[in-house]
Image 1 (cartoon, rainbow, N blue to C red):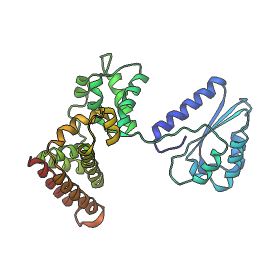
Image 2: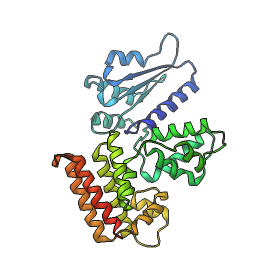
Image 3: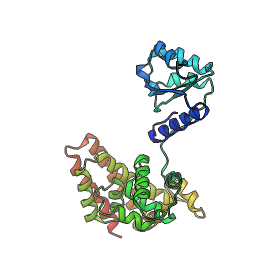
Length: 311
């Protein structure tokens, strides 16, 4: 498994171990961090034990595998043991990239665990609900994502709680609103939505609350930049595209287009360019160019939201 999305990696590991146990219920399973391995321990963990004919070894953070163990691991990939399954988990990035390249030459099964794109989150939600043998109203997907954000573990946990705590046989819009009513969290994307819709007072209130809960200012400038860039792409998009094609081109889930079309009525190319420049300056400020990054961010929120409020 390779990629930084840990929920997908953990599930892929669990499914691989399930297949091993289906072949042999008594399989000897061991899990270890790569940094703890040496050649002797690797040989021991991949060999048959006194109590099981088959073994399965999960090696996590394989990028940290000591260099002296690389040849043995590459040899195991090239010449698999008949009674041993080796499951390697790599978090992506450059760490251990040379090892991963050599391992792939043996053509192992590779499961890509990359973060989902925004447009893929809706499908993840419906798939997650199906895992629980339940269903979700189509109109409830967007409110759920707006309530919990884009982190896959948070989404999965929310769905699990909704299904477990509800007497309904499905997840509805009403259930989500009831369950998350009064939710204290205000995400950076909610701040950004208030800004681009010209709701200055609300944007400032949400900004101050978000900062007080420990959200990094750079996450807010990032959300603002993403929101404005998305509006720019929508403004320049060709006509005649389906919502799915348009959402893919912009880089947002299809359900987000409804709010973006409402937001874009407040903008023209000139004011949008001015807003993007203001956010670019604020982004530099919060990354060290300003003495008081929170003041710089608050000033940016006022400037951009007032540009939207003029229309």
